[in-house]
Image: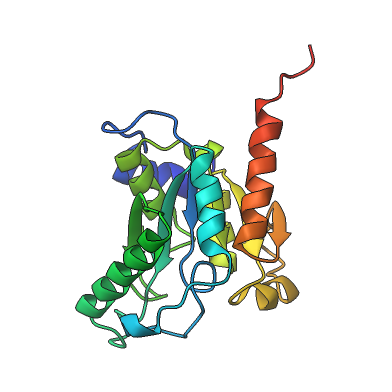
Amino acid sequence: MPADFRHEQEELGDGRGTHSRPGRRLVLLDRDGTLNVERNYLAEASGLELLPGVIPALRRLREHGLGLVVVTNQSGVARKLIQPAQLEAIHDRLHELLGEGGIELDGIYVCPHGPQSVCHCRKPRAGLALQAARELGGALSESFVVGDKPADIGLGQAIEATTLLVRTGHGAESERNWPRELPGPHAIVNDLPAAAEFIVRQLADRARPRAA
């Protein structure tokens, strides 16, 4: 277990929820570039646009019993590029758009701090994932992290989850310029629908009886 993960467990709790069924698998989803079109510090709810195939992909994940959780760095708040009320409106709009497709998120977890912050919550640190697991009863090492940046994959590695890099948003650039010091993701896929397909196959593989 990574040292940073152990430290954050001590600070934030062990990630086991008390109000949901224990051991639930979660899909921890980045927001910008993974669920919605990347706008570079999206500040207005009217600019929120879901990427193609997002609703069917989330529906498929939900049908397999997975929790759906958005985990997002929003340093625009710290940079004064977006006000907290604007961020709340954007997330209200996200709930609305997904709700029109019959999708309900289990939670949206936000780090509002800047890159130089020493907070526990900014990805790739594990703080938001630990909070989600604690509140939702998630089993992080059995869960999945999907995003378009190294920070998303680093989060997944910190919590020992299965990691998927999507090529939407900044993902194609991330793939080309992957940091040498960071291990790669478990899979690189074109978009969220492809990520959902990979996850469903993984669940099927895990469910198969192991040979004696």
